[in-house]
Picture (cartoon, rainbow, N blue to C red):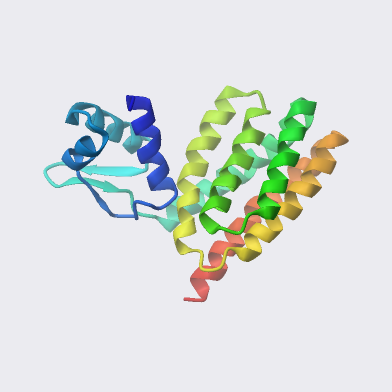
Length: 207
C-alpha cells in the first residue's frame, strides 16, 4: 500500500470513528499492519496532527484527538459561513453532469439504511458540492473543517431524523441548482449545517 493510501485509510478511521477520541495509536502496530517501516507512519501522523485529528505528546505517545466542544463551536461558526459560499458558487458553476451525479447520490441515500454507509454518503455529498465550487482553496479549508466536525457523530444517538432530512435537503437543493438560485442554495446549505448542530445538541441534552 502506498503512503498516500495509508494516510487516507488512517484518516478515514479517525473521521468515521473506527478510532475513538483519545485512543492510543501505536506506530509499530500500524507499521506492521500496513507492511511499511515506522518512518512513513510517523510522518503521516505528524501530518494528521496539523489537521487536528491526532495529538502527539512527547515521551507519552500519539493519540486520536479528543473532541473539544468549544473548538467545534468555533469551527461551526466558520463553516456556517463557508457553506453559504459553497451554495452560491455551486449554483454558478455546477455542470449538467454534476447535477446527474447529485441525483444518483440522492437515490443511493434514499435506498440505504445502514448508518455507517449513510455517513460516508453524506461525506460524498459534500465532496461533490465542494468539487463543483471550482475553488481549490475553499475545497481544502472545507475538507479540513468537515473532517473534524464529522467526528461528532460519536455523540449522535439517533441519526434517522438527520438522514431522512438529508434526502429532502438534496431534493430541494437540486431544484435550486437547476434554476441557478444562488440565494436559495446558500440558505439550504446553511440550514443543513444548523440542522446537524441541533442534532448534536439534542443528543447531548438527552444523555
